[in-house]
Amino acid sequence: MALGTNNKVKVEGGMASMTDLVFLLLIFFIIMSLMSNQNTRVDVPKTSEDLKPLKNPTTATVIVTEDNQYVVMPGGDMENPRAFEDIRGEAEAAVANSGELKLKIEGHRKADYEAVFHVLALAQVNGWDPVLAYDK
Image 1 (tube, rainbow, N blue to C red):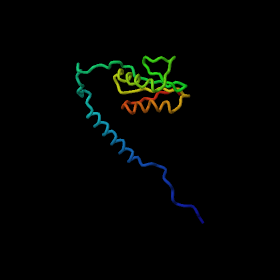
Image 2 (spheres, helix red, strand yellow):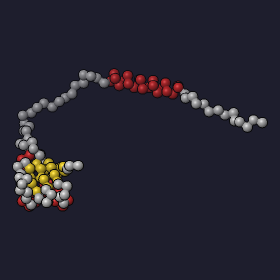
Image 3 (cartoon, helix red, strand yellow):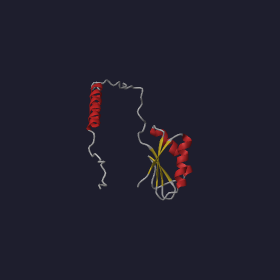
Image 4 (spheres, one colour):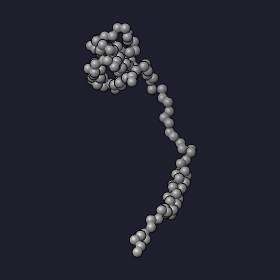
């Protein structure tokens, strides 16, 4: 009495579908290579003398020190940090001189979050783009 099964599993894979796939990829890449033209003209805008260069390419920066005092760069004195109320006008002038509406904010790792948020609020009120800089 034989209790074995007559069903055998074929391990072979059908190669017909693989050759169809390779053939379709070959046609795709041939068509794409014919459609891509190496001599495509690109219309580049002409230079204009109406464009004025930036007054000062240096980004305005407010540095928040460890003891929650502020220094506005460029031109600030790191030896003499001041309170937030004292640097507001200086920060506005620095952003105006930089030629872009961007304010970089650098904070010491021991500075309070509230001190950094004061500068972020100043940037938001004036419509500047705040950029937070930090060290790892």
